[in-house]
Image (tube, rainbow, N blue to C red; front, side, top):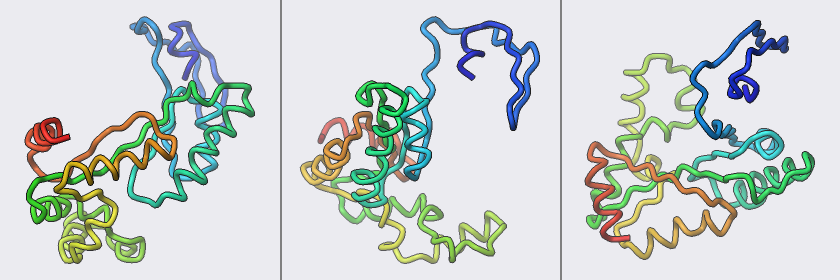
Length: 190
């Protein structure tokens, strides 16, 4: 992939992909950073070894980030002779912020299918049935993987944990239909 972004013709005979004379004709100046998403330490280590950046998502418990993912990125970087601080560590933070606490909580229902456990979605192969199953979930289960806040200081404190754990590039993902309203509130209050 990196060879392609140089703009040269590339021949590649890999285990999964083969290229012969492939080229990208409109190569952007400065290149394209390669980010690798990981939910576990094996791929996080690979991100440290081979990526310009690492991506993960929020809501999975402190020990995953602090004790597994970030150390694995560092380990991979060091094994490749790289400085781990040069690797962007991005996290998509799921946050439902609204001055109205009931609305902040209820907005998480928009992404309820994310909250289904493996057991709950195991035999569901129809997206409409998946939505029905998600709609039946208690709001506490739906909101579990989100930062739900109506107080700006609480939101800052909860988001700040991720920075403390070693993530340096925060991307905010709000539930609900009105993203503009969320962004305006977030900007004004935080």
